[in-house]
Every structure is written in structure tokens, then in C-alpha cells.
Image (tube, rainbow, N blue to C red; front, top):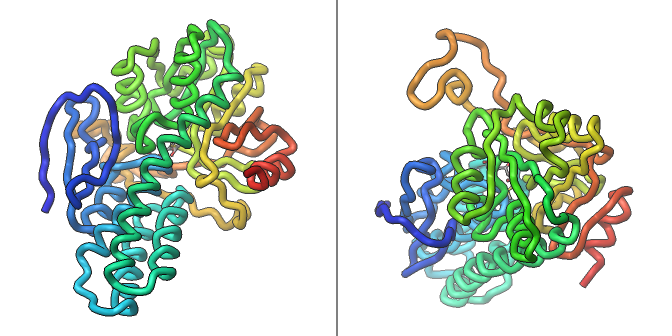
Length: 353
Ligand code: MRU
């Protein structure tokens, strides 16, 4: 059963496993209210991913793993085969929620692997829950390492543009792109952030601006249409974004609008960085294999409950776009920073212990 509580919290932990339930921040309520929701059924997790209660590639990956942990807990199976069947049904439901972020597949595959390796029902259930909890802890550590690696690329008095939300709220905690910003600030450098509002779902204004302000980091909000203005007027000197999927060639899939920011950055000679853990890399797919999620027209035809477009208008509403490798200065990971040519440098990241 879903249970809702509202409270103001001093540090943001997007999701956690607590008393055999999954607790997450309901991101649809931000920035107006910090509401925590509790789930004990994997179908609720699937629904939370679909409706953006939880979003951001790494957070979706761990949510998938927690969803399977709930499915294991819910299962009445008495044999390993029966339990694997129940888990496969849950895996499919969770997998079908959102198509672009590869971390979801990564999280689900990892848990299914653990389930297959164990011998009896009790051990499978125990191992799944233990692994899912560890994945959540590892996510935070990975982001802190990634953040530290990235902080070396940023200097005192930099003004850094970011798009969408690749922060604590897109991960379990700390964040990827915002993790780099946090680590840069923690290293003593004085930096400012420019956040794009990120139409149509406003992850930039609702989440990034909320999160950075919450942590006392200097942030200014701009409309998406002011990216060129800020760049040509020297108001920004570096860009950093997160990613939903990165191919072995360095093609980066991220929130719609990333491609135009990268193009504009190239035009103005501004370094464009991507920060993501290795769980965001898809070393098998080619660009033609990647499904770009198309979201509902109402996200574009209105703001909140207010209609801002004529009834019946045709809408094109892709949630993500692809930024080609030639626009990217570096990809920051927990194993180091990959630089062009990416085919070679990404391969080397995976070879590092
Ligand atoms: O549709 P969303 O809000 O899930 O999209 C999220 C993004 O595009 C993020 O920038 C991306 O997942 C990187 S998260 C660390």
C-alpha cells in the first residue's frame, strides 16, 4: 500500500530500502513540497517510474532493482523455478516503463543474474534484497568518485551551465553532473551554475534549481531559449550534463535539448562535458537501436493545469536527443575521464580495474 508523508529534510536521498519497503521522494511534487512515498508492491514502482515520481537514469536503475526486491518479497513461490517465473513477470513490467535510460536494464539484469545463481527460494530472496541495497550504496560512492574526477576539470570562478536534472534527485544521492559541481565546490573553488528550465517537464527549474538552492550553491535559472544569449555574452564558460545512455562510440543520449546546447557550445568554443557512471554505457547498441521515448502531448500543450496551445494541435514531444561525439570535450566517469577519440578511451575505461 502507498503511504505519503510530507516533511522538510536536510539532505536529499532520492530512494532507499527501509523496513522492507521502498521509500522515495515524489519528484512530481517538487519544488512545492518534499513528499516521501512508500511502496511495498513492484507494480507501484513501475507506475512511479512511468509517471516520473522517480526519474533520472541511475535512480531508475536502482528503482528497478528495488522493484525486483519487492517482487521477490511478494512472491508465494515454493520452488526456485516458480520464483524465477514471478521475477521474470516483474522484470518485464518494470522494463517496459521507460525505454531510453540503459541503467534500468542494467539494474534489472544484475538482480536477475543474482537470482539465477542462488539455489533455493530463501537464499534468492535474501541475496536479491542484499544486492539491491548494495547497488543503492554503490551508486552514492560511484557519484562521489566521479564527482572528484570531474572536479579537476573545473576552475575557480567558472560559471557552469547544466541542463535537466543530473543531481542527487536523478541518482540515489549526490548526483552525476551535479556531483561534479558539488565536488568542485567542496574542493574550495568558487563556482556559479546556470540551470536551464528544461521544458516541458521543467526538471531544471523544479529539481536542479531546488536541489542547488537547498545546498547553498549559487544558481541562476534561465529559459531554454536563453542558452545562446548567455554563451555569446560570456555568461557561461563550461557546460556539464548527465546521460541516459552512452554508446561505445561516444554518442550521448540525454534530455531533449542537450544536442542544441552542445551545438551552441561548440559554436562559442565552450567545453561541453558529460558525467555518467559506467552503468550508463551501452557497449552493444548502435544509434539506430536506441528507442527515444515519446511523451504525452499534454506536457507541451499546457503548463500545469493551464492550456497554452489550441485544442487538437499536433505535438512532437521526444524526451531525449542524441549528441554526437564530435561535440563532446570529455566524458567523466568513476574510472576517469574519457577524451576523444571515444571508441578508444571508452574501451580503456572498461579495462581499468
Ligand atoms: O526524463 P528524465 O527526467 O528521467 O530525464 C533525465 C535526464 O535526462 C537526466 O539528465 C539523465 O538521466 C542524467 S541523470 C544523472
